[in-house]
Structures are given as C-alpha cells and as structure tokens.
Length: 127
Image (cartoon, rainbow, N blue to C red; front, top):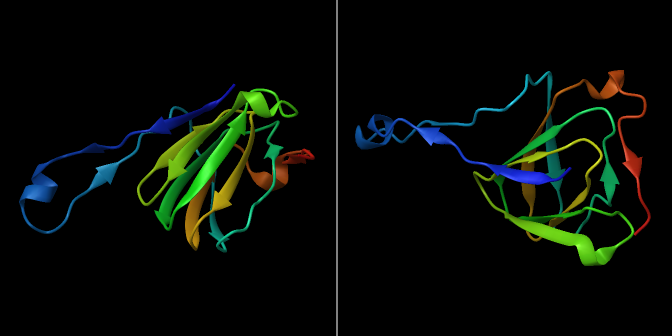
C-alpha cells in the first residue's frame, strides 16, 4: 500500500533537435479510463481511497501536495509528495490519500478499472 513517483523516460534526440521533447511514462498495469481533474487554489478533494483500482495522477498544470497515510486515522503516518507540472504518481488500491491545491491545478487521473464499473469507486474517510 502506498504512493510512488513514476519517472519518465526520454529519447534525448527529441530534445536536442530543438523542437521540444517527448517524455514517456510507463505504467505497471493497463489503464482503462482517463479523467481531467480541475482544482481551485486552497481546495481539497478530501481523504479517500479506492478499493477496486490503482490510480495514476499526471500533473499538467499548477502546484499542490499529495498527502497519503498508511493508516487513515493516524496523522503520524502522513507522507507527502510535492506536485508540479510533469510529476506522475501511482497510488495503490486502499491507500488513503488527498490532493491539496496550492495554485489552480489540472491533473489527468488514469485508472486501472473504470470508475462506473467499481462498487464503490471511492470511500471517503473523515479527517
């Protein structure tokens, strides 16, 4: 159970040729759904977990913090990852987590099982 940062690979020729660059993230498992999430500054999605799927988050704009816990009710187990453009995370099933937006943020969430095919897709935890 936990959250990891997925580092991209890059063919440096795509940077050296002056046109920009191509960065590639390789998920461990197949992804079946993509969602665009918009966050307003200072807002929180709330602590929750997903019992039926692994969630990948790719930050495409803005800054924030992903906070997660090994034990939902024990703040002493809290850890965090600073989120900024290009950071990609992988959150295991049943990992308690939330995103705190520092600035306006846009994140692409990618799931290993369709949201509407999960029962339930999310379980919220009182903080």
